[in-house]
Length: 297
Image (cartoon, rainbow, N blue to C red; front, side, top):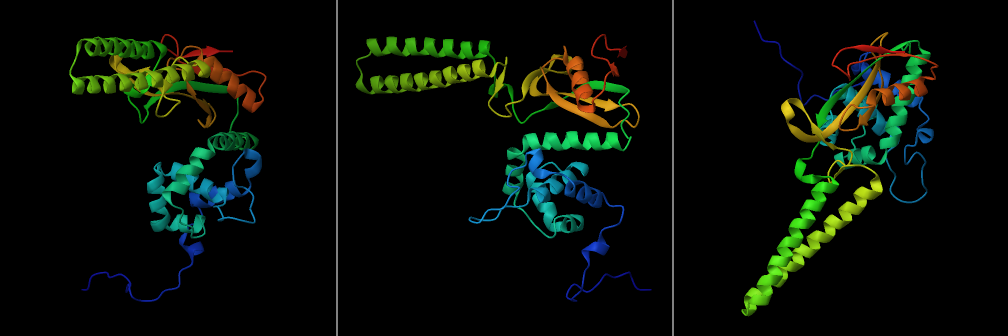
């Protein structure tokens, strides 16, 4: 008995993408949802068309790609770009478009606030469909690490410590410069002093930026990341995510990046949910204090 064999690769075939995507595919849900969104009102850039210059991708197409990647846990811009070339559902969803990973990455970077507005509109749509009740909201936090480390995270105390160290090294080099008569050594010392003063200026600018931000910490990479104390007193730079879910179908209704600790964050989250859903009152479940569930009315 012969084995099961596939089709001849060299055989010309007619393919219908519409028939290759199942009727209950999430790609169809995403396509329908994004098509009804007011992209310009939500704040997405390049929603209009220009008469000159290279045409840009329709932001609705890239949003569909991101939502599809979110649903299937594909976060990397490079992986999303690769999926556009091999994934039949994305062929159908994007009408055959294959954006580069740079176009995908810049779309995410330039439309951060628009993404948040889209999520809020989705939550309101779920409320209209009665999938969100808004009577009881569960609130909790979780920590995720950023593409960062402690060397790139600073507070005022750490900045002052670096400046103090630089000043001590400059004094040391200047003292050696006054005592040295060797020309080559003096040139080297002057170079070291110039490098230290340049580094000091960078820390001064960082201190000013921290002061203007009104925050207690600042990160050079992933600016929203904070120095967090995680399990067993292990410190790391990341995000303290505050999330709220409706009790009816356990659907997520709100999330934001909180401070390094959960102090006051449950109240902030509850007020945000109340404002978003237009509620006069709600119950919240949280374990922020004493590590046991409590109910606040």
